[in-house]
Length: 203
Image (cartoon, rainbow, N blue to C red):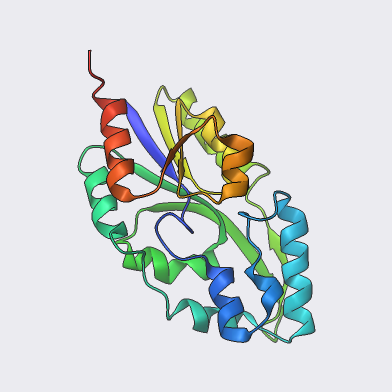
């Protein structure tokens, strides 16, 4: 039996930090896991920028409130859920993702959480566990599931490689250059076709 694990940002919803950058004019916040492979380096840099620019959790949530799922995302999720379970495994934070998950009709989301002080400043981030995406796949395999994993960034690679079938969805060229041996698709139509080929292989 197959189960589908997928990243959230860049696959079903826009990149949150890119949109925070666009709204605030802070260019450095455009960097994501599509650009930097070390998540700790990326997040420490983000926290420094938030502190330097006096941006609070509420400020980021205001930007997130303006976002909607990517065109076709909800329909694609509905298609997956017509034949399989979908688990979103993300390196975002529950304080960010909740309104977006609501718009996606609440698929299961496994992610991290933030430490926020009394003034609403984000002071730290708390990983649910190290390499959580890969470990979700590993745990599901321990329950005798076969996993189809979908992602677009450096932080998805270990999950994609652990899964029986890993698929890069619309990845940047730098990720393709380094991990081009993985299956690559650039649209929901192509992703749907790839999944159909996996679950119903031509004999």
